[in-house]
Length: 318
Image 1 (spheres, rainbow, N blue to C red):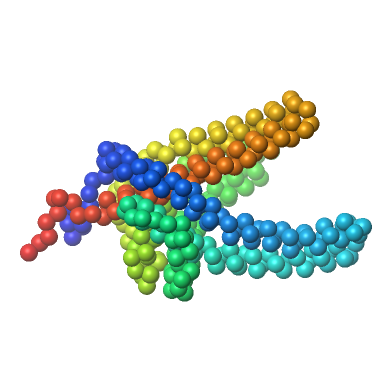
Image 2 (cartoon, helix red, strand yellow; image 1 turned 90 degrees about the horizontal axis):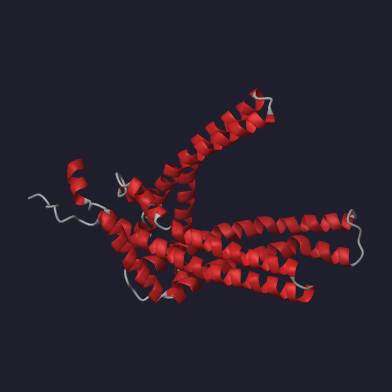
């Protein structure tokens, strides 16, 4: 039975990876505005909640300070305490919307991978029914729980060894060397775990096909498709590293330019140059992130589908 299922799965070669990526890159470029727009739409609810949280926690306090209330006044402390009640509400709302928004985003990327006519409105699709909302929440919780299960043992071992080293080594310089080496080992151990956790994300595709499906079963079944291909999936992830480098160079290049302008020019011009550099950094980063997210996710969808397609060598029995 195992041999039969192995024959069912296609080989995923470097040429296959390049071909799938070329196809998805072309599709993303055709829908670049929508890819950027849906990423910005995804962030809007979180930005609004953060603004509400900031105003609720600090708004009354700033108003009292502006009115001449002392920093250690009881009224100020009471205002901050009342504002803290909003924290729990905002956290609950963030948890409630994350699943459906992720589900809507994955509907967009799945449609993009298939060459369908995608729209930014697909982000809000899960909010049209309670079943879709609940499906998104279940999947996000399942992915979070699987992440905890896979990460807890190496994290506890790492923390225990670091604590033991801190107690045993008195020389600070020697401890820093040991702690640095342990951190490198920990990060190396977490790389294959990170790749394994990525395979569970393909569960979104199965959930999109059947929202009544168990999220735990969907992630397990999706992960199974990558069995024997984890190293190839890791190479797939590494193939995008150049884009991350480009984003970092653009972001820090703009910030550096603005900082140089701030120190080298007169006050008015310096502020204008710094503000322009920050705006340029935000705009360019938004464009690149929108492109890269769509490029990676749609390519990942096609990789999963390629691995689960019947190969030419598979012949069903009888």
